[in-house]
Figure 1 (cartoon, helix red, strand yellow):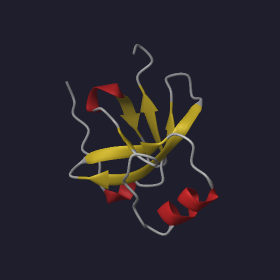
Figure 2 (spheres, rainbow, N blue to C red):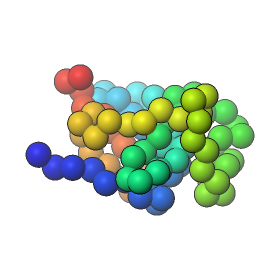
Figure 3 (spheres, one colour):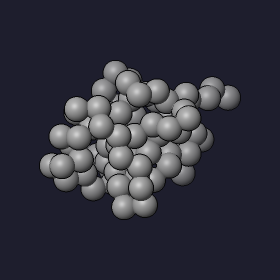
Figure 4 (cartoon, rainbow, N blue to C red):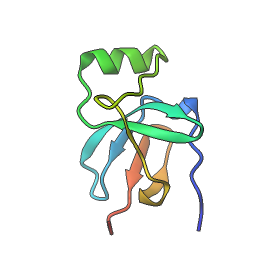
Length: 82
């Protein structure tokens, strides 16, 4: 099984479900764990574009490694069998 190690370069990527519907963005990465903002507002989009990470209970939920199907240059796709 392939493991996914997230880095700061993943911040700001769109997260989509297995069918391609947008479910949020990567708002921060800490110790290889990506955090998803499921409903990013304009403030979150601007701060992530500037490289300002924000991890807290309101703006970030940890992304479980086993939920990730693929990671591309601009998108994280979740597995459809979850």
